[in-house]
Length: 147
Length: 363
Image (cartoon, rainbow over all chains, first blue to last red):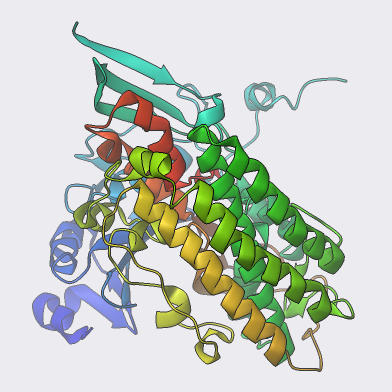
C-alpha cells in the first residue's frame, strides 16, 4: 500500500518510516485510524510499551486480501488517557481492555472498560515498569505461603 | 417462560479449559452471551521481561500446551530477527517438519475433543491413538512430549535422530489411511455427525473480518489466506501443498478444513523429509546474549491461526517487552456473536468447533 496517501492527507503530523507511522500528537489518532480503516480490515495487535514516564502505543493493522500491515505509533504520558478506537475496529475492544488491565491506560469512550485477565479487585497494573510487588500482592499470588 | 441466564464454566469439561460463558437463553434458543476469560492467566509477558532470552523457552511450551513446538519456533524466529542472524538450511527443514508434526497433533486433539462433545467417544480414542504415534516421534527427537523444549536461537538443540525418515514415513502412511477411511466413517461421512454440525454455528465472513479471526476458522468461512503460502517463511515456498478452504462457515466446514489440513501436512512432511539437506543444524549462539535496542515483529501460521510476537529490546539480556498475539484470543472474543440463535444443545459443539486453547488466550 502506498503510504504517500498519509503524507498527502496529514502532512507533517505523521512521520513515515517504512510501514511505521509515528504520530506527533495523540489528538490525531482517531482521524488517522479512520483513514486507516478505509484500507485495512482489522486491528491485528496493540502493543503497549512502558518507557517511564511515557507509554508508547503501537497499533498494528492488517487486512485479509494481502499481507500488508501498517504500524501506528503514538506516545502518551503515563498519566494521560487516550481515545478508544473500538468503535472503528471492533477487535480493539478486548485489546484495549487488556491494555487497561496491564498498564492502567484509560481509553475514552470505550463501551466496556474493565479488567479482562486479572481479577476485578487486583491491586495495581502489573506490566508497568514501576510496579512493585507489595505484601498485598504476595498474598494474592500465594508467594507468602509457607510450606 | 422468560429469559434465563445460563452459566457455563469456568471449570466444565466441554469448555476446553477454563472459559466462562454466560449465555442468555429463552426456551432452547441462545439469545446472546458474554465471555469471561483470565482464569488461566500466568503473566507470561511479565515473566518474559524478567528472564534471559533463552530461559523463556520452557515458558513458551506452557503458553500453548497443545501446539508447543509451533510457538517455540515462533519465539526462536523473533529472537533471530531481532539479532539479525540467519539459520542453516537443515534447521529450516527441521523446523518445517516439527511445525507440521505439531499441527497434525493439534488437529488430532481437535478431532478427538470435538467427537467427545458430540458423544462420539470412538473417534476420541482413535484420534489420541494416532496422536500417540507422533508423540513418540517428538519424544525421540527432543526427549519431551507435551513440552519438548527443543528449539534454540539459530536452530535446534540436537540434530534429528538417525533413521528419522524410516521412523516417520510408516506413521504418515498409517495416519493417512486412518484419516481417509476410519475417521471418514465415524465423522464426516456419518449422517448423525452431519446432522449435528451442518448449518450449526455459522461464522460469516463479516464476523471474521470484524474480529480478526485467522487460521482454520477463517478458512472455513471462505477466505483463502495462509501465511505459509502468502508470506512464506523457512522453506514453505519450495514445498507443494494446497490451502483447504470451505465456504459454509459452519461447524462441519471447520471440521473439514482441519481434516484436509492434516492431509496437506502429511504431504508437506513427506516432501520435507525427502528434501532434508545434510549439514549443520544450528547457527550456534552463546547461552547469554544481548540484543541491541530494536523492535522485531514476526508472525507465523500456528494450528489455531496466525500467531505473532512483537519483541522490544533495550540492549540488555532480557526482553524489554514481549507481546504475544494469540489467535484464539480473537476467536473467543467473537464467540457471543457466533452462538447467537443457536440451540443450547449445540452450544458445546460450537465452542469445540472453534478450537480455543485457554492457555493461549489468557497467556
